[in-house]
Structures are given as structure tokens and as C-alpha cells.
Image (cartoon, rainbow, N blue to C red; front, top):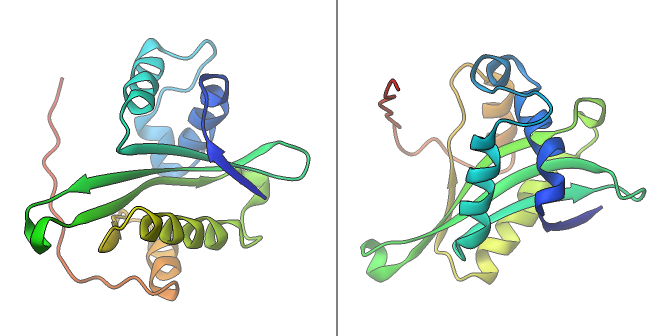
Length: 152
């Protein structure tokens, strides 16, 4: 497997993976051509040195996974950096093969390279398998997360 930063040409495959699960189907709008909002978001991510949109390729150079890492500078922890994992997705036909574990291990290594003092993530409470997956990798439910969604 190869890990690399995503390019604009990868965007369709990334959005397809993000939309290809029960929750993603409800909140994403995957169609070809992609809505402009996805390209605009990609360009913002790509131009921010604290954001890394990663794709994972198999030996045939096919994209089989994606995730986003954000490096957040804080004043807490004596000016520490937190790494945030978001949008971990595996192509449907590749799930259950250990790719997700390798992706998260890669993200942990990358966070250490960037001198982050911790790595964090959220996962929807409606994803019990994901919660168990992250627990098995050593993540702990140390905080209660809260969100407020805004309507447009």
C-alpha cells in the first residue's frame, strides 16, 4: 500500500467512498460531475499546510482508502499540537482486510512526525463497529463530544 496526499484528480473517488455508507448516503451528494462544493473544499484543504487529505493506493495504483489529518495548534498543553483524524473510509470491496488498521497506524506515525502531543478522532455513536475498531487500536473515550449543526 502507498500513502500519499490527494490531488484534484482523486476527488471523485474520494467523494464516492465518503458517500458509500449508511450515514454518508444521507449527507453527501455524490454525482458526476461532482457539485462545486467538493472542489471548493478540496482547494481549501489543499492550500492549508495544516491539512493533509490522504489517499491509500493498492499495488495496482487504485485508490482504496482515504482520510484527512488536521494539525491544530493550541495554547493548551504548553502550545501543543493536536492531530485530528477525519473521514476515514475504505472502498467497499476492500473492507475487512486490515487496511483501516494500517491507515490509522500510519496516521499515528505521521502525527508523531509533526510533533503532535496527541491524536484524536470522533466517530458517530451510530457506528458501534467503528467505536470498537478504534478502541482496539488504543483510543479511549476520554471526553464526551458535542456538536451543533446549523441549517443552511
